[in-house]
Image (cartoon, rainbow, N blue to C red):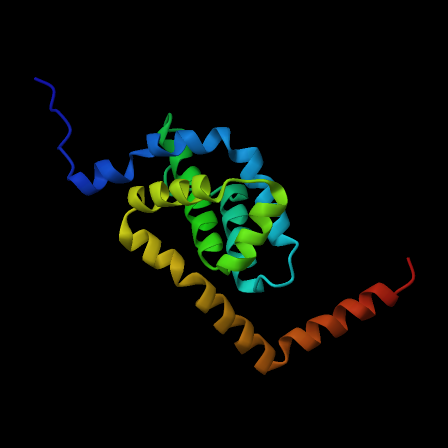
Length: 166
């Protein structure tokens, strides 16, 4: 007799409840415009912008938490990383700046808040807590690099490379 897979706890089921993200798909172009406007804004700290860069790097990386060969589940880790990164990015944007951009673009702030609340309910707290620590870790790494002078040496090296004749 074939063995049935072991039942998983409710946390596992909750983390796989990505149906809550379906309404976001229809608003993706709108939120994309908002995201581009915020990324172009100098008032957003670079560490917050770096979170989105890390998420993009994960998407482009051939290494996945769940292999792409597994139907449906293989893409869920990519979706989860992007949505959590967007949530943490937006959480770090001052509300006044976010409201300013929402008004400029004609986006309903209440709808965005409801979508973010849905994401926060769906993603397990330990995962969100881990992602929320990233901006401070990025700031710490940047500070360490500045103190070591590596950033200055890199800029000097780039200037020398640009000065070389082609």
